[in-house]
Length: 87
Image (cartoon, rainbow, N blue to C red; front, side, top):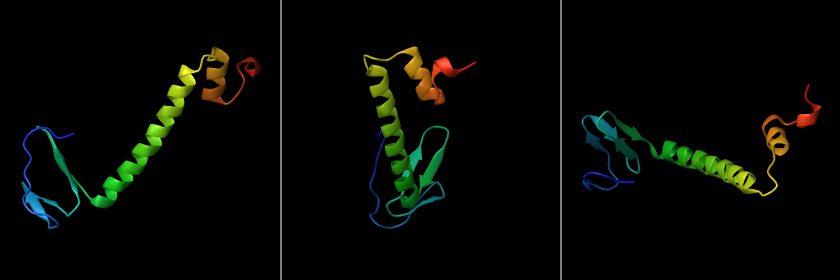
């Protein structure tokens, strides 16, 4: 999501923003409190982690939306054991 002003200065070269170097294909993120630069490698790593999180959340949503959802099934999913076997 992009808010605020954007401007393309140069393409495929390192630029600096307030002394922070932004490498080609890097990501610049900032708000009123912080400005960070993220390398392309880290950006790809974050994207991969996001895919894993999305898959995990998608599985959870499907589990919750299941008409057979019950306390027993939820307990088994969370703790890996049958609720009736606990003591």
